[in-house]
Length: 192
Image (cartoon, rainbow, N blue to C red):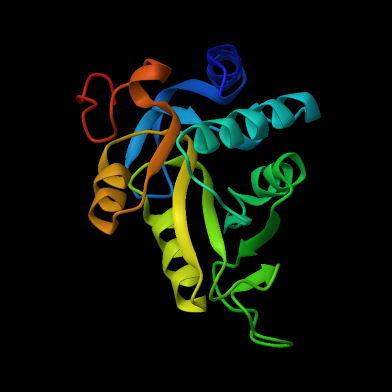
């Protein structure tokens, strides 16, 4: 991955996706923060989404990771996994938050993954890793192998620890340090 592409992506995330709010808001993780990172807004322009897909694909392939399928939990992974599929030639899928309760009743939609599939797991913004780990469990249940996990931005250190324990390479494209914000859970009462 070129350093230039990563720096451009970082700039996009900082300028288009990061908002400092006057009061803390509750995040999906249940934590509170005045710093809100919206990966979907940051990558709303097609050129920015393509840049992110190319940077992510470059980062994992530079690390020697080979994948044939890419996906993650809806809604954070939707645009990213489709764009990465286009850039890399991989198949894409989306993990539902819960089964639909009708039709095929599948949690994983899109490419039918299973034994023999090498999956690149994607999420946009991670705080504690709950969403991406839920997607990991759903992928593992199909028999597919998660070969790496990537996030646009990681607000803390929990996801890295979790993936380290699982033996899965983890690549945040931007950390809280890169974004210039405090790690989740470290904001003081005066800053939160």
